[in-house]
Image (cartoon, rainbow, N blue to C red; front, side, top):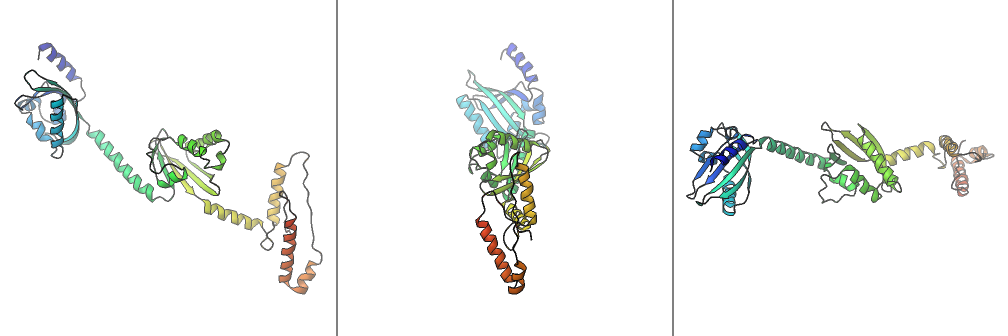
Length: 343
């Protein structure tokens, strides 16, 4: 190699954030290493002089499980003169275990040997981070599968990281599709297009904006109609990394129970008509939608001599009479009319 090229390589190698050197395989199959930069000592934990004297030391550091693939990748690159790119593990000269990424560009020499301009980067920290992420992801998968409600985790940009089958089912998402990276907004738009939530029908854009606003609040708990008869409780919480955790809890049964309790509290148990409380609620509601010029009609009926029937024939007969009267009055109702038993 001429002096000018050697000097240029030396100056370039000093600025590389990793090990840089020329690795060669001679025509007789032996290894040579030249022009190692200072970072080589940090990567391999041995001096440059030691590497120069015995390049085989670097091969000896490679993890036994990785050595065959490493040798194969170098041989393939030498034969086809293709770019070399390989990840492997080593135990360096100080006993530390490291993950390295190697890249090199081969060039065949006139004497039949091959030389690579080679760069080796220590990616141990990156691999450790990837391993931790993979471990956490596996743990989340196990946990999310065990959660009976819809569960999803979103990143800082509101992109889906993970969700369980229940969440997919609620939003009618393909059970087999890889939805990682889908934004919550796109999920909402798709749900609106499928008319999964009655509140979105005919006002899809406003509904999506409203749902996004709730999702982005620091801590949000809301309820929404789902399908024809279902109800969901939406619980959204921020994560320490700036993402969001979303729970979608099916509260259809509890809503039905609440409605039943409400009906019981506002309905006369004997006749099924409104009681005093129910009548009061209907009157309050009516005054809220009445406008100028509207009229509200009230009719009060009293059953004459009902006490005589009760006293003479017994309460069972009296109850029968009340139910018959209630049924006949109910048959006369229009859609906007209500009947209540107040006595």
